[in-house]
Image (cartoon, rainbow, N blue to C red; front, side):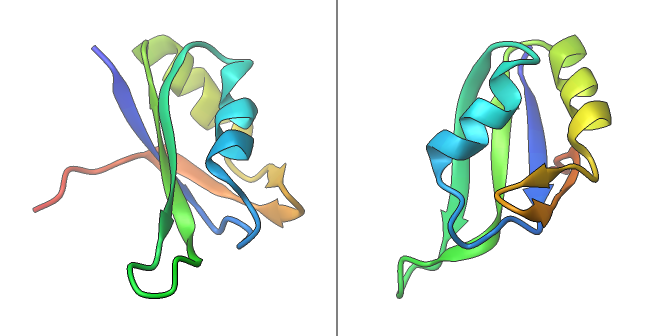
Length: 83
């Protein structure tokens, strides 16, 4: 079962590919999406990464939380379900 990961405090220049490559060293990335503003198309500063295995996702969360991606210290944790 895949695990969805929330990544916050992203640089506005971070792309889906940059996000994917940051997580790929920990395991298979099913998807990586930087969330953009519907009207302007500009990044909203957060995104989601889906990983194929829970073990890989947990390792990625532990290793990447507080690390830098594109010069910004990011917050990484398991995504909560929408209500």
